[in-house]
Length: 190
Image (cartoon, rainbow, N blue to C red; front, side, top):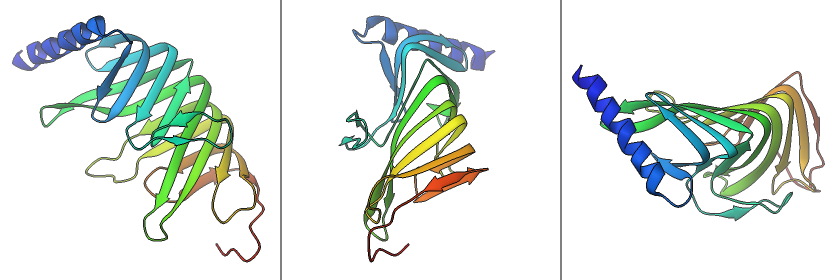
């Protein structure tokens, strides 16, 4: 009963926050959500400019010119699952549907290089890093296309596949039933 009341109070506070902000956006644990919002006990549904953005230093996508933070997901709809952990509200998973666009970057701390990702798909599922799983990922399905800008490539690589998983905390991409077009720089090694 106390847990239900506490959760209801938290949701009410979120609704008041959203109602009093001039822009329809809010931040939860370093993740900014924007668009028209419907907030329930354990979920936020976004429409009309649905955006999920991870905080970080801004950068500009060389493919489309969009400015993003660490990662930016836009879609017709985004549904974020919420839970309370250690007295904080966290996003456990977010699903983006229809006209999904992704702008992300992968930083290799060992090589001190950065790869930039511009992707599109019918659907994307974002899973943040957690204590038990340090990999934050974005799983793309349905006409998944990833353009990858890497310092070792002459031009952006293009990956297509049935499903593509982009790992945000390391230089790793997994592709199922995929195809890749790549043109390395002369003398570059992978």
